[in-house]
Image 1 (spheres, rainbow, N blue to C red):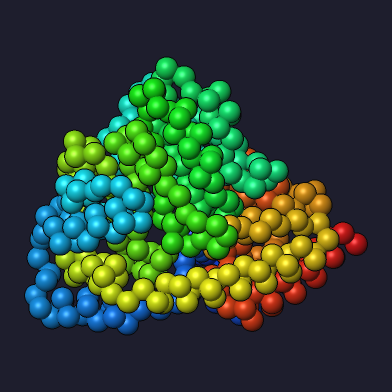
Image 2 (image 1 turned 180 degrees about the vertical axis):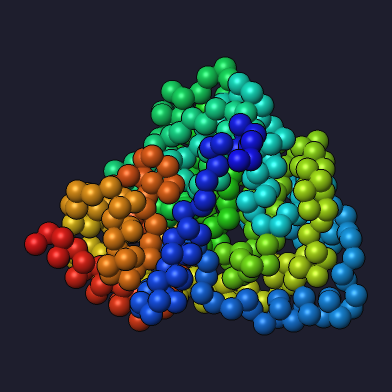
Length: 390
């Protein structure tokens, strides 16, 4: 038996890919599966972006480049972030990574050590807690309540702050709930943090996927920008999940350390991928709006359908492409229920507990699937739930 280091004892398989593997195995056995487990757009990457990468490949852009990222891409990202958030951003504050998740990983690794506390949303993206533990820190969850539309409670955050609090993680729009933090909520939070030496990691990967109201970043509020690490990427907005391209915006001292960790891990992001990122941000943006409207129709369809099924209750998400219905009408652990939906109904989804202990009693479905498949899934889910109540 291999003697593993204690630091990795808490790590296990990621639920989304675990369910995907099981769903694919059932499909190979001939079972019809409707996929709602993996959070990626079902659209192809826009042709202009793919063409730019092909052109870059044929132009010989296949060598090592600056580990912090191509200067041209960092300039474009800095301009994009500055314009969208209304803040000043220098290219030296930008770090390009192989997706947004590695940026989150390296930021936590660069900031957190033994004894430090990290406040994070729960239910929330499954990377926050295990990476905090890996870095030697103590994860401190804040409960995102359905009754508060899965937004933050500033008073709860205040109650969780201690002398050991080093980092606060925000995610708006939120994965898995689709909840958002209002401008008023962010202002209240910014005021709370104004005299505290706490960094904020703002995971804004779904910032371009907002259906109701407007996206707001805490970095836009006075006195917070210099202590905020913005994390964003290309995967969701431009249907580039497999390209592995993301970025972080942070103060220069931290950016150098995060870039150093990036270099130690993977040297650099391939230059042809980075050049595709330049085209994504500088090229036509009409497709972003078109895809958002398609997601809006899908959101409305799946929420209406889920709410017609006895035993389920589903809030209308304000952003991202997930629904997080409560199944409290069916007294069954979320993990067991999700497995039964897969095995018996052929619908692949994730248990709420894949996103933390406060996800118990919920399921996560991604509506990055066609309207026909959503209707089929709703039919199967409804039949399944009726059989369980009978």
